[in-house]
Length: 260
Image 1 (cartoon, rainbow, N blue to C red):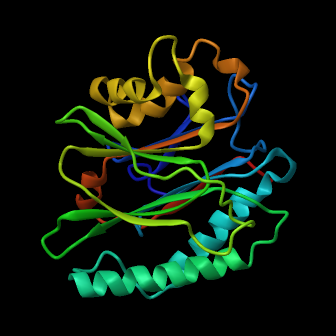
Image 2 (cartoon, rainbow, N blue to C red; image 1 turned 45 degrees about the vertical axis):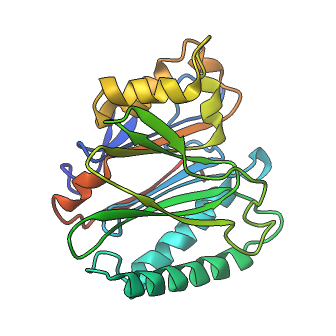
Image 3 (cartoon, helix red, strand yellow; image 1 turned 135 degrees about the vertical axis):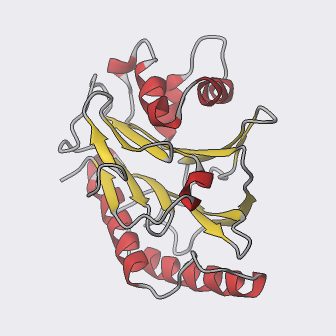
């Protein structure tokens, strides 16, 4: 793995691709967590495919989230449909149709006792190198879109109880526009533990994006919480500047998870 691409930063306990993406997982009721210790949250970062995902499974089956993201990532690596190619609307529709069909096939093979959320963002360039985001979502994990110019934050994922393992198809498939001021944050529902007194979660996230570099945001959000050693749920965060994905090709990917 090339250090200038994606690496583990010991100081912040975060995975970082400089100026592009940063991610961190905090196990509940722990001040820090090793990537070797188990928890229900899992993160997928596939830089080659420009795919970013969060999954969150229950305490009694912590491995479910990791298992689904691994299966999804294996399909991404093997499939012949490449969202990096220049796409007109027709080929983009074909890509989406095939992608959703295959994800639904993966979902249909998850048993009732392996439930997990799944919130996925795929960054898709068109022939003019303009970007769109494709959102695929089940459950109550979150995808936020941050607009730095307009100072706005929007929850793009629609919270529901259609956990993978309890449903047979993806519950949300949407496109989101991207411009040079767009940033994204994917997180598990444990993020709500970060609320400060008299300050809404959305405002706290927006302030952090305005004041800090991508590389440091997950660590600042998690460790800036005064009671962070006493989280009642696992917290996972992925932050992303999608525009930086056009700077070069990325060939390595990693599945970041806390599990066996």
